[in-house]
Length: 370
Ligand code: MG
Ligand code: ZN
Image (tube, rainbow, N blue to C red; front, side):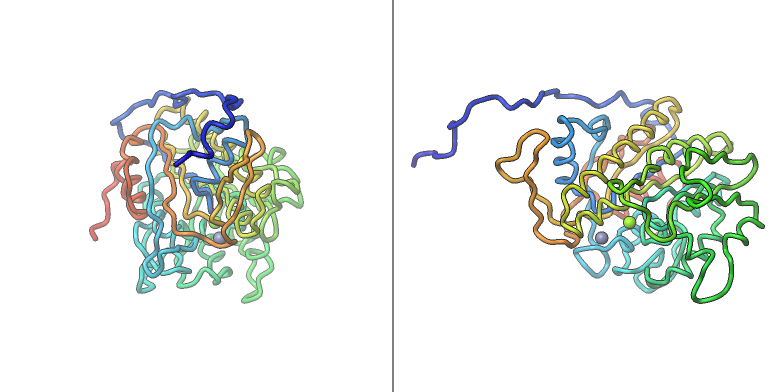
């Protein structure tokens, strides 16, 4: 046999080889005071690999000292949706696809965010989808179906979450199912409600002391990064600082790069890469915060992969040749990245429900009996 494809070209790639880029881990083995969970919706290993090669061979993902792999299957399907995937991470139970914060029988299960609130921790959600979308909803709501968006908005309005940034304004103040104005109701409960209409940029909004904070970034789903959305990295930093400055007992925040998934559904590589880069910039802000803070566990992962993305031969640095197998979710495991106190436990292969238990353990919060 002659090896036809080997050795025909021996020019070195213009790719630097650096073996270790991870930053030192502070307070290993200590209890975490805060958790920032970052979810890239639809962000599989290939999305991250392609993102690294499309960005001069470096993204902030490489800074994490601990990595693992997570199984994403739901209760009824090897290929999960974002509702079941979110519920597994938020509540620690496998549920059927489309279930939000409920178990396989449709029974509500408390989320880590709700349990954090019970411990007088502060809580925050920052997303680039509507706030009623499946992933954020699984942390704040309990509905048999993700399609119940107006009931989800009602639960969010009653959730007591301290810092909310995302789209979906119309589900709060121009509802089809009733005439309630949930934004007004939230104002009466001590929220400062701001939106993209009165302040185009979140950067121009100043949170008031002693008020909870909401900034609606769109009526439904926000713009894509390509068409001008600009808030995710800023909101991530702002949220962490807002919650830290107002909490004696720590905080739990979930940040979602929601639209990496939409790029996969559209089998649009530029869409995927621009959303991934935006998410990576949010990671940089969060890691900078956590490095200074020293008591914050940062966990970055995905609910599932979307698009069956591959990197084809002929790819070059900053010019990846992608291919999608189809514009739907896939069942491949997703990577997990962790930094900070407790991060050493996010290694090996584990289930998405285990992510919930690992986060609880990092906070020294008692886990539910199963
Ligand atoms: Mg999502
Ligand atoms: Zn999807």
